[in-house]
Length: 336
Image (cartoon, rainbow, N blue to C red; front, side):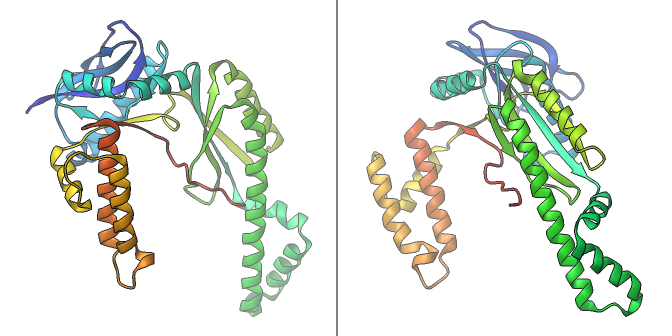
């Protein structure tokens, strides 16, 4: 199997670093070290070149755990920006290409997260306990519960539906109240917030917070204060300190020259590509194939056009080597 380079993260250092045998490996852990450019470096190990989408679930989970463990160990000594799990390139020269091509972006990200950590906070509640409290507070809710209980099997479908609606609305209102309280108390100690989806009905809050390392104790105290304030109704779980996974994860991509040519053909472009020519070509095709502009189903054609436009924009910005920052779940909206 061809050997390659696995990239864990980018750190701020102008000196070569050796971290020992802590990296991804099957029989034994691989040696982790740096490949540098100017005052930044990629933390890497030499591993067989693989495509992670083709590996078994067990292998992926094992390597993901090692990937995160390496980054979290290194962040204790260096300003660190994570690289997307599973990022591999063929040679050390390719790593240097990525560092050189993306230097300004990578240096800015390192400056942005210097002296900062991520703390993840999850809050859950026990719905039966919350419903008991709501029933004591809401007269209509309580009376409907008592009516249905007294009528037993004779209770009407309409009353049961109404009670269900009252419960649903009461829980949404209460959840929103708790979310705003938690946000209000925790955002005072944080630099940025990244919300995540709720994965079940008992989860009422799920977010990552970016904060200064010096504010970690104050943040922990704010969690403790909330825990006491909401005692017996809400339970908190805090994970950290972590690298800024949710706020600054680096994506490296080498664009295949054939992709560029295919994208040019899709947009009807020839020769050297300029931003103006790309914009005009995309605009003309978008007017023709955008689903909102046509009577037929052109969604597939429009998707191809969008992909071609994205490929050529990346090519214009960085040539065949493309570096970008991915921020997780920017579009999540909590109940309101």
